[in-house]
Image (cartoon, rainbow, N blue to C red; front, side, top):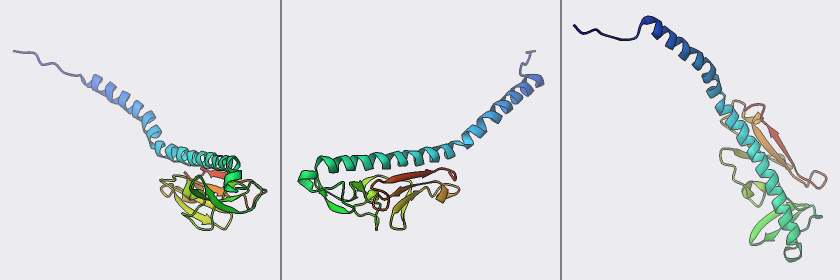
Length: 158
């Protein structure tokens, strides 16, 4: 006769308890990954808007003689290095329409929906968020502010 071997009931219970304790800590961490990813995406888009605004203003200042771009004009529309821009005080315009020469045409906002919020701003919203309007980035136009743009990031609904 051969003797059969296997796990005792005590060993199986101990393994199940250990797996239960590990999953109690791991599952909540994995559940919040999608929320943290949305928050990171919103914050990244806010940074993209800010760096794009400064890049465009620097380009305006560097080519002012050739392009006629002005950092003192409340509304300037023209071409810099073959690309069309609509600027207010040298900062990108938020737009009176989308897909024009405004801020939304200068960046990649994949995963977001852009829409105009009145004349002074463009809002970029994460539609997959639990509360999309509170998971957004808003770019405010320099035309309505004292010659400077503003970016507001809202992650309360992500």
